[in-house]
Length: 489
Ligand code: AMP
Ligand code: ZN
Image (tube, rainbow, N blue to C red):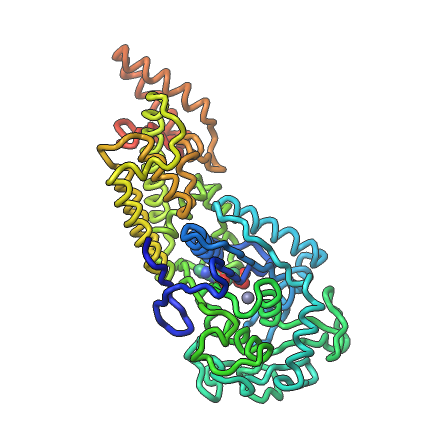
């Protein structure tokens, strides 16, 4: 097995993974802010964290993964201005904030399930940790914070190397927006935000700095430290978090742990910081404020299996920007179909030969052993899933070898890729678009009649059936190399 190397955003280097606790891997992933449905870009962050977690498990580490649910504190602007995203959504929808949080948390979990993202050891909900946040804040306040009318602020000049992760901030905090009057440094940020006089919040708590709510960065420091212990192994998030949220988390962690400069990475609270790049979409449909934004459900409504989106993510390296297009998604679906059909073919052979459970049969075949080594080397190289998929393709295309070897190798690879290849069937992949006016049964019946007509050389009837199906949005795919026969457009 190859040595696992991961790119650390803090040191900007590829580093060999060395666990803090022997044999274990403790990972914290910044979770969603549950004020709206996640868009598919958000879900890229969790597919990436899932692949990381699965790779650590594959490498034999006992994984403890925590993903938080942000139900308080995240403002509409990352730079301490604007409204709390959840308070705003609740006011707009005239609903309780708790209902809003529940609804969107469940929607997020549905996407997690559909994308075959493994459940973490813990979903930590921010509002369950208010007492711990207050304790943390009290501990760091005397040496690192100051009070303004609007709340308690963290003075970033009190820790070494503030902003090293972002590398974009000058000493004066240039490039940052100083939106709160009286801050000592432009990059200072709120630890506790007081509810302004005359305003009421649905979510507020008493604190030594007045009634109010915690700042967003505080929650992740508190939950990460409490649930995984400082320093833990890996902290993940989207690349936007490299600029503000994570530098602020790091500053809080340094204050809490009384650690010095960040040339020693674990002084930051975690040994490795990893960030996925963005999924981009040129026409602005990724914005949650646009009417029909790109949710996973929209893809499903249009007839795409959600794992086609997972495939799309896996085809790109997590540190590269990925451009979304329907053509790209279609290509990913085609690749997934191809793999599913190949696995089904091997299954058919397996059942025919009455083969026993395939177990670890891959070990008996030199070719599958070599492919699994290549697969492992790809993942060990900073999670190169694109190369790992190529090894899987080659495994499915092997000409020699028995079904036991191939299926056991595929099952092993799919443990990391999470495409559900062993169980998915062609029928599962046929997702009916929401707008379809015809059922699968009706299509199959019509196609059976067409087949009879063709056998009887009654081409007029056969063409009429085809035209009728086309009018209902069904494309008949004669001679499709994948044997797909039809698709709903
Ligand atoms: P949020 O719910 O806004 O806190 O974001 C959840 C996660 O999605 C964070 O890790 C973000 O960094 C990440 N994220 C946001 N937009 C995108 C995008 N377009 N592509 C990939 N990740 C994203
Ligand atoms: Zn976070």
